[in-house]
Length: 266
Length: 224
View 1 (tube, rainbow over the protein chains, first blue to last red):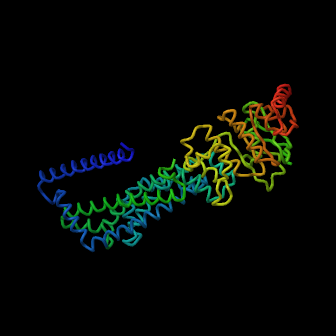
View 2: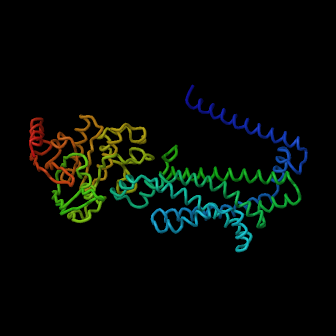
């Protein structure tokens, strides 16, 4: 048997076992819904699937998803850039580290609901989710990257200095490969948090064309299958966005040689 | 000439260099032999600009490029052998000279990653990188660890050939390495670092036969 057939067999086995696990939980959910026997309290997976399928054919669904996606991407972008810049600053300046550590730790510990309510006072309804997502993401990126930068091997930094490597070469060859695993971890965590906090902010701020608004409507009219279907849509979107961004970053890493071709950075 | 004058360097209570002076020629091989921890590596690091002495000066380095072959390999694990060596080449797309790979017996390993290489192979990649850098001065710190005798001799010849007419400063514990490569040997001790004896090996390295090598080793043993 060749290595590739063994690998594809293993892959099939893995997919099979994942499907089995999914089927188990869906069956359990179906059973629970059957026992409760009240759609308002617990919709069945079949009802949720049918509702979601119905939503997919609706233009408004896509407009709503696009609205939420844009807000979340904007907040994520601000958080990623801001967190990265702050990490570079605090890693290189002890005073900046002392000054910024305290507020960043406070932001990290503050409940997202507090931010949402404060932001409602300060900002337009469309900006509230962007603001909250950015505030959630920023400390995650900052703390992960700061930790990553501390791990950069000083001997490699010295080697780069001794051989007078230009700044961008040094960045690409020495700094990025060592920081990248931390950035990837931060990105993965951040995307999940972005959706959670972004949708929560939308439910309270109720901007037009937002998943949060739809969830709120579903709750008011006690349309439980719709509530579940929108939630399922958010989960799927979050997973898809995470996979897409991580894959893009890895591809860029291999292209620009700061990740090892065919594998993770070490 | 490179002139190290009245260098002083201490880490906390530990004085590594105290009023240390040494003049190095523009070309040739200068070896420093001495016990571990006597300050040889620190001196090399000062010359490389990796360490700043608390007082004293190093003159004659301005405008010169300095290549360093560190005691550890310091390879980038995410780059292949060839990419690791090409890293130090000045132009973006210049490729590693084939003869470096061939002479270091790395021609077959160009596309492999350091993590899959033996200690000796990794050492050769680090040597290849230092050779490819093509500096005015090459500083080497115990460069031949993990290489067998025959390969070590070939690598020594390669370094001598590539750096002919330029300066090599080499730290070693192995007198036979010094006898084979050096024009001048400083027997050093410390701390703080001090020169205990200076020996000249006047026969050009390529003309040294076994008897001359033995004679040089003997003269080192007898020096004080």
